[in-house]
Length: 109
Length: 119
Picture 1 (cartoon, each protein chain N blue to C red):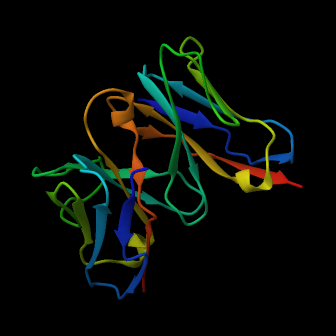
Picture 2 (tube, each protein chain N blue to C red):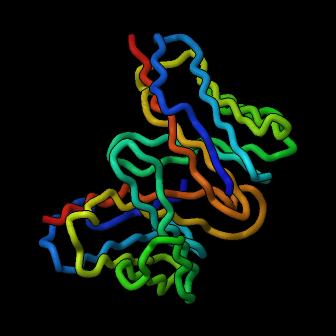
C-alpha cells in the first residue's frame, strides 16, 4: 500500500538557520507533491506544490525539492523565524490524496 | 486565496445525540470536498470524499451510516455524526478543491476545523 513517511520527531533549530524537513514515500508515483503548514487546533494551509518533472521550486524563504528516483522531497525554510514554528505536512496527488503525519518544527530565538 | 469556513468551531454534545458540521467554500465553487478527522499529534485521516450532487465515497473502516455526508451544492457540504459516542470525540476538518485542470486543481483549501467533544 502507499505510504508516506515524515520524521516524527520534532525538529528544533535556532532562529536564522535553515530548517530542512524530509518526506519519503513508497509504492506510489505521484504527479505532484505538496507541502502544507498546520498550526495547533487549525486546519492545514497550502504552501507549495511541485510537479514530478520539477526538481526544485521556491517561494520566498521556502524551497522544495522532488527526487522521483529516491522518492523523496525536501522542504527547506531559510532564515527561519520563531513564527515558522508549526507542523509541516507533505501530501501526494493524484489520483489519491495522501498526507504524511507531519513534522513539528520549533524555531527558538 | 480561497477560503473555506466550518461551523461550529467547537461543539460539546451528549452521548447518543447527533451533531452536524457545516463546511462552506466562500469564494469559489468546490467540486470536491473532503472530510478528515485528526486525533492529537496524529496525521489527518481521510474519512470520505464527496462530489457535488453525488454520494460520498467513504474510506475503509468509516461507517457511512454513522458519518452522514451531504454535498448538496457547490459551496456547502455537511457532516453529521449520528448517535455520537465519546470515542467520536476528535478534530474534524473539511477541505475543498475547485476542480479544473492542472496542478493547482489538486491544492486543497482547508477549513479551520471543528473540535467535537462527546460527553
